[in-house]
Structure formats: structure tokens, C-alpha cells
Length: 325
Image 1: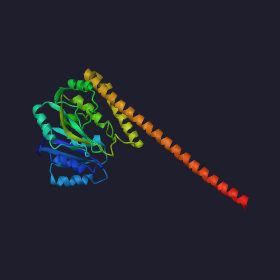
Image 2 (image 1 turned 90 degrees about the vertical axis):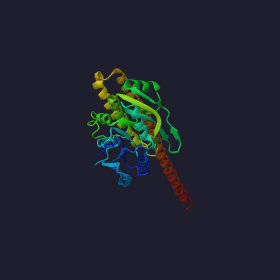
Image 3 (image 1 turned 120 degrees about the horizontal axis):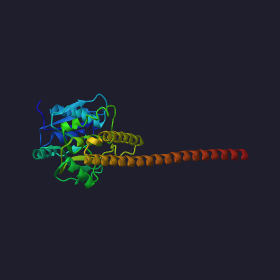
Image 4 (image 1 turned 135 degrees about the vertical axis):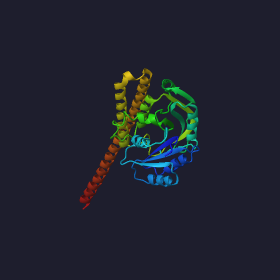
């Protein structure tokens, strides 16, 4: 089989409303030498049936079938293990790409052949339809030292560890899982999973390029695990974040002597930011629990008052009935 230049991995779970749009943005890329890997993560809707129909018409589409639901991190990895391209890109199935996304990747690779990792700006599309174009990045190529320094000093609000809108050298992505595979074997992470793998990708990189081009549409939707107010989901998110922070701290503590000081400091700062995100989520959880408790108290109080007035009415009726009979 002829190798492609870029593999686009789409982990798929209950996204029948969006999967066609994501696939259309891939198959209609202006740069054609790509493969599209759809990973079936065992949802219960028609997402994979839709993907199969597209695969019948386009031989570049391959479908990987997981035996059970593995979560985003592991689903991406299962797709990564079968790629036939030197570079990979991840596309969440509720998002989509600019049609010249892969062309832009190849254009940069032709001039920055040593880059292991290319980070593009992205377009944030809200549920309301409002579109915000990112303007965080400039066209630059860095050593890892320069990249870490730039991230720390820029202090922009974007989550730099998000794997979407990034092109990654396949061998580096797969190598980054060597430490992680046993750690996450039985874990279904839905939060902070990007930060976890990004941490190890940075450790394996030599050169990193950033681009001001917006190639990726990040679409907000009602099922966002970040935006949720569901107490059970927030508690699961907190468990995931706690696990990820634990894995990263364990690695740093065991490998401190083998990591350059600047990289150690950068990774410590990243862990600190994850802890801050976790604290914000804990505050949100406590507020939700408090509001729920107040709601339950009011509900109980209202039930008591209703019973009280019904009982009072009954006694009054009985009193007047006895009095006038």
C-alpha cells in the first residue's frame, strides 16, 4: 500500500449529527495524498454507519473497530497504530477542517523539514453561531527551549496542549505512548487527556513550528465535557484530572536528573496550570452541590407546608362539622 503524506484520525463516539461534516472536510481537502482513519469507539448511534457509507465511495477512508469504549486518548492511539503516513493530525468528529488545511501543512513541511510538530491557530465556533478567529500564533520555528520560553512569556489564554489544530510526526506521537500505555490501559479518560500526551510529545521533539493560519474549526456543542453542569460528569472530570496530574508528577519526580532544567520548569508550570483548572472545576462542583442542596431543602419545606395546610383544612372542616351538627 502506498504511504500517504498525512493521516487524519477521527475518534468517533455518538456523533451522528456531525460526522458527515467532519468527513466532508477531509475528503474535499485540496491536498489529496491523505488517509482518513475513523475509530469506532463503540457508540450506540449511527455514526459508524454514516462513516461506512463514505468509505464505500472513498478508499482513503479506513475504519478501526474498538472492542469496547476506550475514550478519546486510547481511541486516537488505536488509530495511530495503523497509520501509513509520516505525519498525523487529529480531528474531533464534531469539528471540521478548512479545505486547505493539509495543503498548509505540506507547504510548511517543505520549508521546515526538521519540524516534529506544527501548531496552527484555530477558529472557535460557538453554539450561537458566533465565530472567533484565533490570533495567538505567529509564523515561527523554535527549538524546544525557545518554544517553552515563548509559551511561558506569551501567557495567552489558549490551551496550548490541545492536540487539535496540530500536525505531529507519527514516530514521535507513538514514542510518546511508551511510558503511558500501561498507565492508562484500563482508564477511560475524558478530561486532560490532551495535556497528558502533549507532555510526552514535547519531551520527544526537536523542532516545533507555529503558524498564524486558521485551519481548524473548533465547534462548541451541548455535549461538551468542559461546559457541563452535570455533577456526575464534573466528578468524573475531576477524577481524570487528578489521575493525569499524578502520572505527570510521578514521571517528573523519577526523571528529574535526566531532563533539561528549562524543560523541567516548563512542565512544572504546565502541571501547575492543570491544578488551577482542577481547582476551578472543584469550585464549580461545590457551587452546584450547594445549589442542589438548597433546592432540595426548599422542596422538602414546600412539601411540609402543603401537608400542614391540608391537615389544617381537614381539622377546620372537622371542627365546623362537629360544631354545627
